[in-house]
Every structure is written in structure tokens, then in C-alpha cells.
Length: 241
Image (tube, rainbow, N blue to C red):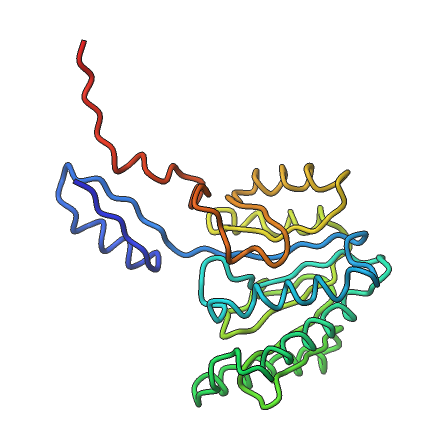
């Protein structure tokens, strides 16, 4: 009576075409998650905790899941410059590396990370404000930093995290609009006076879950995956009058 599929958008299209008429189909396709921290949320006091929590979100699932953050947007003009936070994040990822938490480097993975790093270097040569930090030994993770927005907006995982220093939260909303159908979850750090309003704006962009840093990979069972009912498709009703 029901087929549920997970995979790429192409896989879901092919699968749906094979489903007989009268059988319901629910498909969970490609999704992107990210983190958004406002200028007042990142302070010298909170820097260490937020860096650790962000590193955990990146490390879990080896950044291969729909809840893995592929970009971190940091509002500028706060007490802690976004580039300093990116460096702190790299230190926390290195601590995880020292504990053997990441997958052992593989030839293909190392080559992919090296390619991303070299492209980032070329952006710096071209005059972009870019920085990067990589694991020691190389091949486990890569942190890329840039001020402003450019393409691609998100990384491709592996794990690579793109940290962007942005002028305002509103500017992030504008850049996310083209990705509306793919947005999944957002780790949001902001003070109480701004958090609810920003969460509302994220929901209007299509984000189905807003949580704190460090909690991206731990969704509650009651979370509406992709913004849908979790069990409604499994139920068939008979009304007797």
C-alpha cells in the first residue's frame, strides 16, 4: 500500500515511475542543512562551546547526512570575528582527529580535500578574502573561510565546511531563496529577542527544523521530517456512519 524511498532526486524519480497506480509514494530526496550564528551569539565567553558543538555537528555522520551542516554563516561586527571562529572550529576538529574520531584518510577522500583546498587557494590569488585550515595529517577534514557570498554556497561534504562572514542575517535569507526546496535543518544561535523572528523567517524559507548548535544530528522522534507528518501515510481510515 505504501512505498517510502530515500535517495537522490534522480533515484526518487526513477523509483516513483515504477510504483503501480493506487500505491502511495513518499520520497525523501536531497537536502541541505547549515548553521547561522548572529553577531551577539558569538562572544569570547561562548566561542569555545560553540566551536565544540559545531565540530560535533560536522563530525557526526561524517558529514554525509541530510542533517550535516554544509555551510556556517556568521554575522560580522560582533566581538569575535568570523575568521577567528573558523580557526577555533578547526582546533576542535583537530582534537577530534587526535582521538581518532574521523574516518581514516583514503586516497579518493584525500584527493577530493586537496582539490577543494587548491581551489580555495586560487580564490585567494584572485583577491578574495579567503583562509583555510586542514587536518594533520591531511585527508580527514577541511575548514574553508570566506567573507561574503560566492558560488558554490555550500560544500559537498567529505567533510568540508564553508564558513562565511556575512554582513547581516537578511543577506543570508536572500542567498538561501534559490535553495528553498532543498533546505532541511538549521542550527541557529541568537539572543532571545532575535531568535524567534529569525526562526520564523527560516521556516518561510522551507527549513523544517531549527535547533541549537550541537543538536543538528539528534532530531527528536516527533520531528516532522521534511516538514511532513511522520505516520499519516501509514494509516488508512474507514469511516462508518
